[in-house]
Image (spheres, helix red, strand yellow):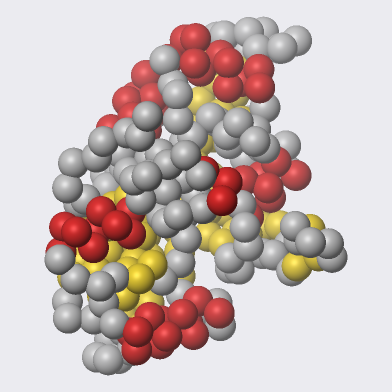
Length: 236
């Protein structure tokens, strides 16, 4: 059964573009990997605005946050050129396993679905750290970091795969994450989502030539879990 969603929260809108704060667990558009689903951000927004819309990029189903749509084919083409040129700035927030260094990056290539590898670059900063007096696996305590992540490229599941390679698995990621930490968060904190949020998107508006910055407040579930483990959620 498909989940029902209230009207999509609009973060930005002009005659060329509209950006929403995509809820967790909402697909951007129809996909063969979720053939049983009938509710998608594209159709919801089209019906909400009563006009043609086209997603300019993708977010994973389990990722919340800034999702930009074009309101014309020309606008769609112009902004996708920026995505392809990697000139659009994106920032994500994620809760990950372990203590991250203050800052860092990884540029390990990622394998394509059909073989071969793609260049992929991900920068990150550690915003907060916490140690919980909860035993996970063979360790008597468990450590976590709140990361600000800036992918320079836009490969499929790039952030999730890169952080899995670094062994700083995203909490709630059932595909690339670590099952024992996910299970602990389910049992102790009733978490049933992935803690990855597309916080910010900055692009040069192709029709006004102005730098356009769009910020999405974090979803309530992410805030709830951060508060429950003792992290500061002020300003998030």
